[in-house]
Length: 253
Ligand code: PGA
Image: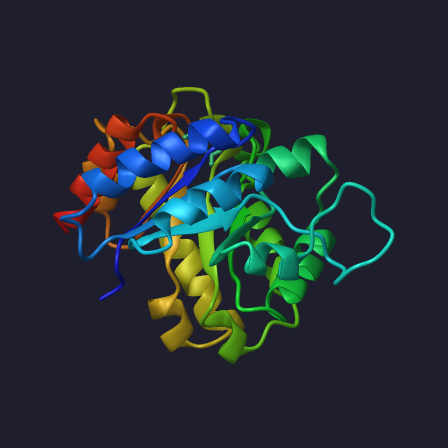
């Protein structure tokens, strides 16, 4: 059985002080949780204050991006080793906002995954189609290309550390969620693809999260689908109470 994962992607929200206060509250309110993997992904400079509070709790920390080189003249960038040392277990790679606004490509996603895997980090790799692509009937082709190119050269052994997040771009921050059956269809397709690219054990064991307007009132139905293992949550992860509600729902599975 794959365990449920609830990951909060804060995007460009919360200062270090706000992150620390969230972390204190979250730590208390999740004390009774013992199955669900809880992750928060603060902005880089809020990672350390959050980690300081959460290091002895079950809440794990992730970064939202990483550079593909180990170090060097890349002004403004952050390396996998720096992220690892700041207390993170996870790193989000290839979020659609990075693809859309910062020129992220399947090739850079692939390089970033490989660089992250030289450290102890667990990459959370995002994929998903735009509305235009879905309407043109290209949804599966897009997802297939993103996964095939993004995971190119990754070994079966390395795949054991990967988490995938299917995030249809049209559902992110829009209030429009994919219906549970729309999401399940793609998650099932992704598992078939993983079986083809790797093997059936990897297909069965890789956690596949859904992301895009996940809220306390739709999370239960989404998590009830066979192939949805959790959520990557933007808006609803910014308030402790709604985030904790999502975690408590996941804990029931
Ligand atoms: P949302 O964002 O929950 O606000 O739609 C999800 C994401 O971008 O990861």
